[in-house]
Length: 145
Image (spheres, rainbow, N blue to C red):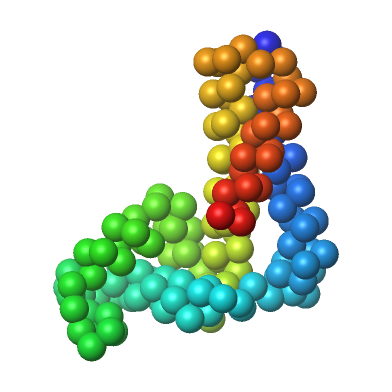
């Protein structure tokens, strides 16, 4: 087993995602935008709340008037905001949250592919081409489900 097969699988999935988002017009590095669907309506406001809470007003971590008519935010934290990848959003100004989310999605795709490849090699002893192919397919499939 090659020691770096999983790294290759991660970068390959990231490259395919980058090219597909470029062709689809959602790659902000190539002039696109990912302002569509729930991203513009939900995720941007959730991540703005995430930034505000962690950087400015930690007292709003459990309750927010921005949550509908006001309410408990435990569900939002648990479902949307507690991924360690989301800490990347703290490095960006609020107006650049769509770019931060693109980078977070790209990194999640890469890590999903790399970890699936590693697992398939370790547990099932798949040959490198199979492990890489299945890992990339898995990582890109989770984007559309």
